[in-house]
Amino acid sequence: MAAGRFTVHSDRMSDDGRGGRYYWCTRHHRVETDADVCPAKHVLGPYASAADAENALQQVRERNEAWEAEDARWAGEDR
Image 1 (cartoon, rainbow, N blue to C red):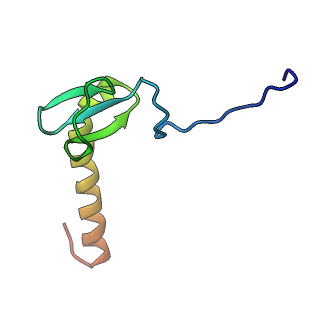
Image 2 (cartoon, helix red, strand yellow):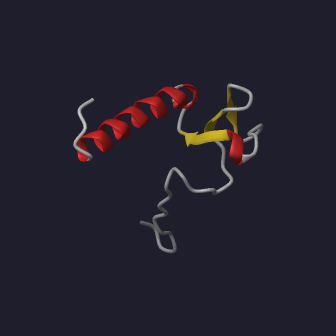
Image 3 (cartoon, rainbow, N blue to C red):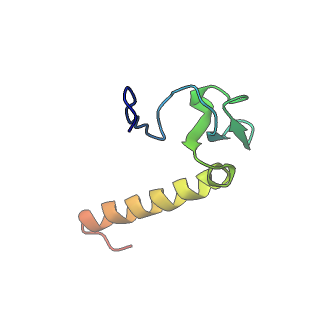
């Protein structure tokens, strides 16, 4: 590295003010970006792509089903 320069690490979920994030709005049923995002209580995300945001509800359903099945197994129920 050049003198005076250092490596900067950022994580995808940080709120650094830069664009490139997509959200699924549960109020308007559409993908939104940083430029037009609704309040946090109405959105899922951020996601790295519009396609990921568009599939947010399916991902939520799949995770809920997996968690419910795991809860049932843990409780000794057969599903």
